[in-house]
Amino acid sequence: MLDSVISSSTFNEIMRGKFDNMRRLLNQGREDGRYQIQIFSRDPLILYIRDFVSSDEINHLLEVSSYNGSLVDDQMRVSESAWMDPKDPVVRSITKRAHEFQGWRNRNTSIEPLLVQRYQADGFYNYHFDWDESRKDGNRVTTFMTYLVGNCTGGGTNFPFLPQPSDDRWCDVIECDEEGRDGYQGIIFKPIEGSAIFWENFYSNGTGHKGVYHAGLPVTSGLKVGLNIWSWDAAWREPEEL
Ligand SMILES: O=C(O)CCC(=O)C(=O)O
Ligand SMILES: [Fe+2]
Image (cartoon, rainbow, N blue to C red; front, side, top):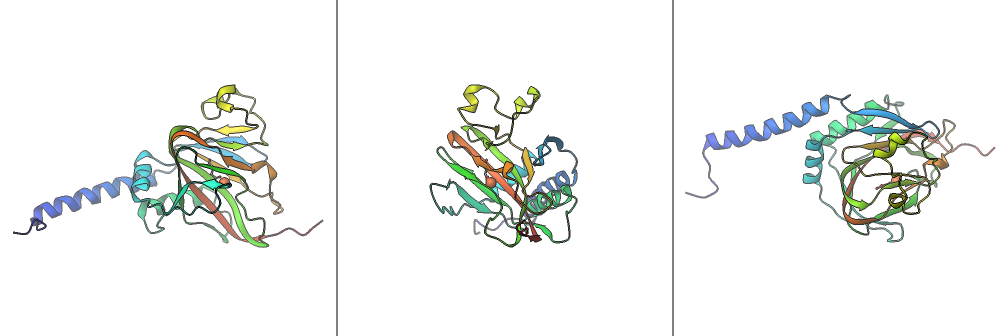
């Protein structure tokens, strides 16, 4: 007998196991509303979302990520990237969640393919806007910066132009003490697994909001993995000069 031949009952058992696992993942995705949302900032609009992705979803995304490190410029970014397959059921479910979350915006807005980014020690993403400043029509209008792994020191997401919130109950998700802030200005969100920071890139007149300038700070030890969920509005137009 060949080693690879298995009995049909074993085969059925394996398939049932896989099927149950996938069904569990999808049912979790269907329970949207299990995440918790708080307004972090009104101008720019920044929302803090706890448990936007579940630990089962995280494990699945990490399992299917194959990194093909598209390093463009090591002054700008040191990370490894993996584009997610839009046909993967878990990826579809998260994509749908992100679209619904935004009230679908308008008929011209779609969720871009999801991007997993892995940062090892010394990995970072320098200061930038998520939109493309060279474009005249169509642009990236919103971002969900989601944390899949935050098993690291450093690696927070820094918005240098945002003021500290007046309530120190935010200190569970942002750096408040001097040591954690390490001399950086503005807000530093800690990479907390399952959480997402959602923000709007543009004012309603189509002008970019300078307040959402941000960076992924250097990971000083350990591992950080982020999931970028971006929305593309094909109807966005560069505003006319005043
Ligand atoms: O990893 C982070 O904290 C930020 C990453 C980021 O800004 C991006 O991928 O556009
Ligand atoms: Fe970014």
